Length: 211
Image 1 (tube, rainbow, N blue to C red):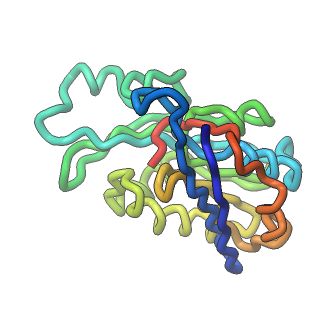
Image 2 (spheres, rainbow, N blue to C red):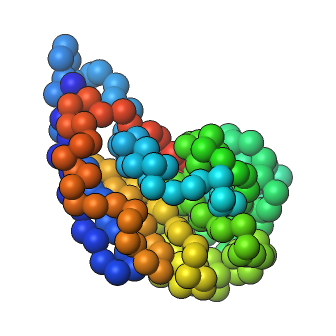
Image 3 (cartoon, one colour):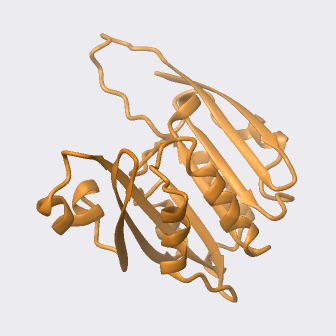
């Protein structure tokens, strides 16, 4: 059994959602429990956004330490590392602790938004353009290692680049969290939403690269 307590922090350009999850084992502590973020967060956003009016960019990244990457990992790239369908863009870059394998996959619609493809999602309005190589260079220039905290500055830069872009970062931190970066947070999440989300056995969504 899973019990969940929610909290939210709303600023002008940022929303932080947290789920404090407590697992009560019914038979033994050897039971397996899927970790992830509450699906009710995604359902709420889908009710507030016209998701079909956005191009959805899933951003994938994984740091492989020095001594552990080779021609095999280079050949398979980020797709083999996470065992996910190949996207349309992939590159690597070196940082202090190793090599980062980077990739993106673009799609549209509700199914794409709810997929477990990645833990970082960029919602790009139809009228906006975002060059994938420029996106890659943002991560490369700051040598992002795709840890919990080191992606934030880049994601904020992406959100600030256009007033209509929305950037989402899902995390396993705090028992599950979601950061939303955008020009204006009005109308996306309200504090009253916490009262409508399930607190007992909420459906959880796992996403590849959950930070």
